Length: 266
Image (cartoon, rainbow, N blue to C red; front, top):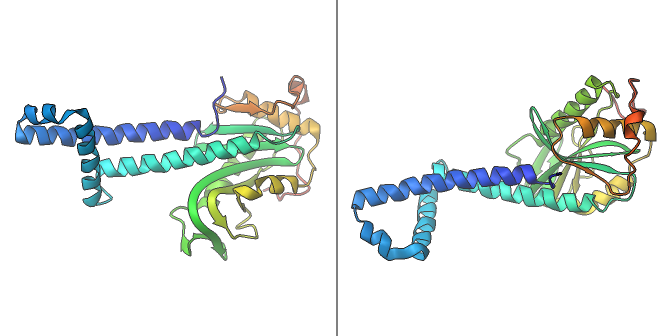
């Protein structure tokens, strides 16, 4: 069975919530041992106990961001937002016309790639971000609301692109390097240029961006790339477009190394 977009992040979210609940249970047990009164807990009942759990969570939050239970709960909420963003993008990619092949949640040795798009317009790796606010750039620095992001998303996007290039080269398909894209689902993107070679776009511009890419990749090589991604053990969620005929993909595999006329391969 094929997983849906965001499946990996949903799993991460569940793990973090379980970790948060674990720490809350430890604290609740500590309260019980301190008071040594089981009647109090029995009298409260499940509804009130849930309120107590929530109160403990906010109390832990007040103790500081480094408190374990709050940290895990906060990270779980971040994972949920990320999963929702990936699912929204996955639905949009599901509306693409015939000729596109989409891979969701491509699991690799150094993390995962949210989406990979293959067509005669080339290969794109798409990193989805659920951050809010105004996204802008100052020189080569990507910012949100005027402040630098907590991580170097540009470096992350390039790492994903090179990962796929290395995989295709290793399999003898080609040495094409995918075009890296960072897609913000909830932010006002005010970036009108590539930042260190990476396209930065908002979700409302996704289809227009894809339509604007030039068609240069042969159907034969495109099919070979699709076959490689479909067969690799690292891919855990393959979602071929319904209108793409995949029955003859395997015969298109070629050991020939092809260099893109549009991208600077290095």
